[in-house]
Length: 418
Image 1 (cartoon, rainbow, N blue to C red):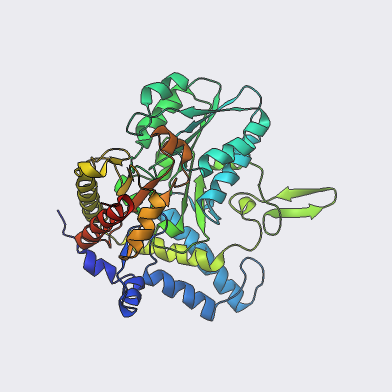
Image 2: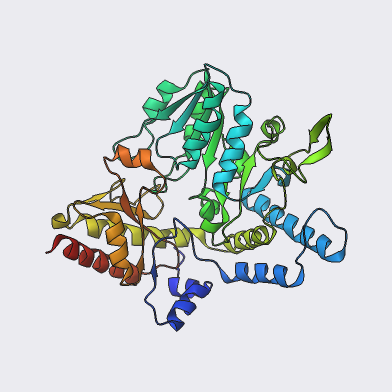
């Protein structure tokens, strides 16, 4: 197995040096919300805004043409990373906008009696978008049941798949439990039993380690995949979706404005071909260039070594918390991180509100997230309103786990008065 040095990996992230200069303890365990930004990303964005600050696809002066080339080079980098044609990569403000564009476009073909199946472990963006757009067409929105551990119940899904199903919305990796959906297996089942269904995947938690899946997006039995740069060591404000050309060509745009048209008159407007059709207005140019730099950075990493390191840390944290009976701790999804699972440790402790745990842990420099994680149906599945989540990345170390465990114990002692 290739060795991995998290301390050397930290050198790619200026945040660690900045916190050290400020004399602050810094145990960042909130990468599931947003990863830290890699130095090459910051450099690429600064270079663009310093030297080539211009709009894209419009003017023909030097700076505008250079900006356009850099912007479209980012699309090329994304296409290469995911193994797709460049014309099937649509740049967005993030996963949420991407999923809403997809939901609006596909709902145009829905009618009363059609069914939309939505996995109950989805982020709200892959639930609410279907409730807004598909339900307006009279389609029925039905949740896909989960097992006690929070994984998709494959038997229940198989029973739900019929010719009436037009959409299946999945989360590739749960942002609460870290459980991964086998897209080949689940997608093939859907294709066989509901051949008219389009399969939409929220890839926000999986895109950072896409090389681990050893496949190109078009080779999977899915139709759309969305993700965000800020969970891939990149900037906020930019994301993308991939979609099959034959489906995108029949989708109307969600947003209207500049660039996404072929002609405009009061007699009617013609829409451009994808991906331009779905990129109305001035795009997040600087962020997109940063997105391309982030993916370029990701391409050069040893993802297997990083994932092995991350999962070891997650397993240690989960096992340590679960082994403390006085804490009365629930690890959402269970404490087993041996297979098919990302390093997200979500837990609930009886009598201690997650927000209180996070605020008290912050005093020790431990950054975690407390709340429902935009996954209220999944929280309900576990009989909870909220949980605390420690999400781990390659720059985390055993010292971070020790700091988190000590901070959690100290918070509990204070909250319970023990």
